[in-house]
Length: 117
Length: 169
Image (tube, rainbow over all chains, first blue to last red; front, side, top):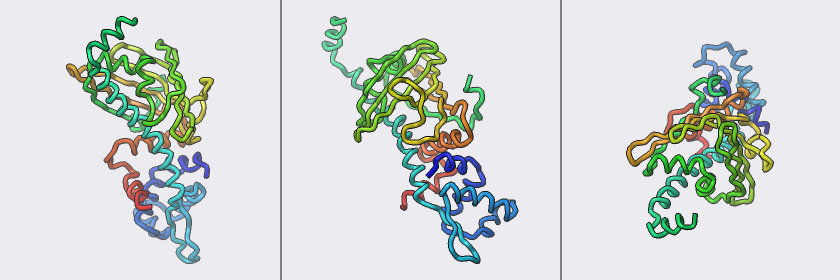
């Protein structure tokens, strides 16, 4: 999986909307095209980008070739974002706890700490 | 200034309020002896915490995850106005302080730009972090934007239904 392709594919609002639509279940290309004011070839082009990024796949049925999400790619994106969320949220949680500790230090300890300096 | 280049919709905003006076919160953000006690996710061990608080100065840190994965980072300070404003770039780095891609992901803006304001609320302090992707490619900005979407818990972001979907997997 190439995350550069994945995020490149996600960097377009129409493609994000297509993914959101597919989260509800498989749909055919023409069904997908309906809500977008766009020609079938234009929609197909977006789908190709999503398919190359591994975000969707197309079914084998030669007639309709319904599109579906590829959960593994989405999961990889989600896992990656999770690490990032943790860094800030948990750091700031820890800062909150740390500030409490700092402010609840008994006065005698504070005095001793000052004397050391 | 990288901040001026980005679309405001790509900015990341975190607001947190702490029950502590502003000077103390500022010190916690800007002094090594304090930073090493809180910077990093829970359970991570600090490997290095070196801070040079001046314009152009660097905060270089290293941390190790509970599974032994090392993560290094680097800030470069752009604005230091004690005790109310701190602005710096935020990058991932290696242990020699050279900028590297995100350790868990190859796609991330190389030098994001963060401005943190500290507001005195009379005994309490509100920090407001406005964070932007800085100079970056479209894919990098998208990675940053998605992290933003996910961090505003309960938001109606584009991905809220995808998030719901992922939870069912």
